[in-house]
Image (cartoon, rainbow, N blue to C red; front, side, top):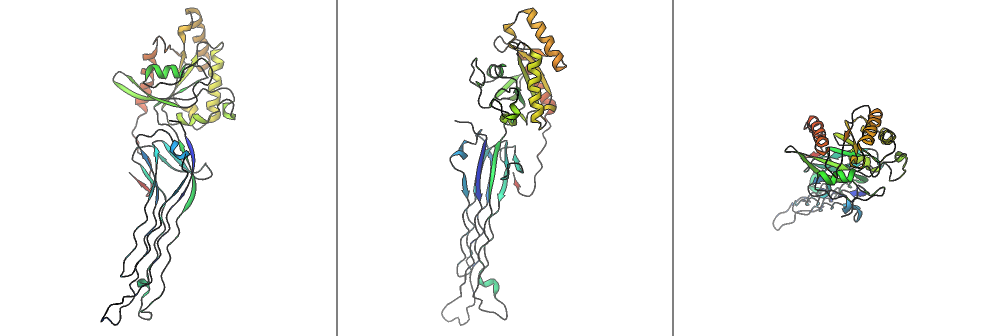
Length: 343
């Protein structure tokens, strides 16, 4: 399955059904009077977070969604039925933006959340509504109100507890494969990871979700390399694991390069708790390891962890450091909702 984290979609709610103009005509009843029924309301357009989805790939093949028109009213005071609704099913973590791709409409973070995007038009009144003492045989009815149409953007931001950041070939995918059941592509060339990946890590009978994104290089916030597009997938994380490769000649410079991109991206990433680790330490001897750990410590201002996903050295220490921050940050807050939310 291909990964798609952004899609542009056109939606339109259903028009209301027209009211009916009808008169009661029965044998032996001299004055039947109006009996035109009301039109049905048009269908609504909803968006719902469902389980089992982790991409927006379905919206590559269908971008137009229209709810049904309400059924017109009929004689004998028969009201029309409501038009069928349309529901856009998306993964948890999907945000809905207006056409400008900046105005946030809703943020679906929990499976089962539903939000009303476009309400169907009301049905028109039949001629029975216009009967009065001075007009006992009205011959007019209301048409249904038109539905609402709009263009929206769907933007998926993966929901994970911890996010992996670093330069290309820093060992992020190797670490993810070592501590979870995920099977990311691993190779010795830059930008092996082209799409974000998720995995569930377990330590001391506790588990949390880790997100891996493509590597960052200097100028990523300006679109250099793959750019910073995928940083949105670590916006929701509670802690960042910043991996710096032991094969870097200057670990401090590598660390500052990624930190600079996080600060340029903004959206609160630079303020998130960060755990720094020197990865791939199995490739160093004792003296080289000591020097590079010291250089990295000077750059980040804290003692970095030593990590080798291949030999498993330091893996448990890193996982325990991550889970301690994750559990402290888990508050179980309920998202703010208005009257258009249904859960």
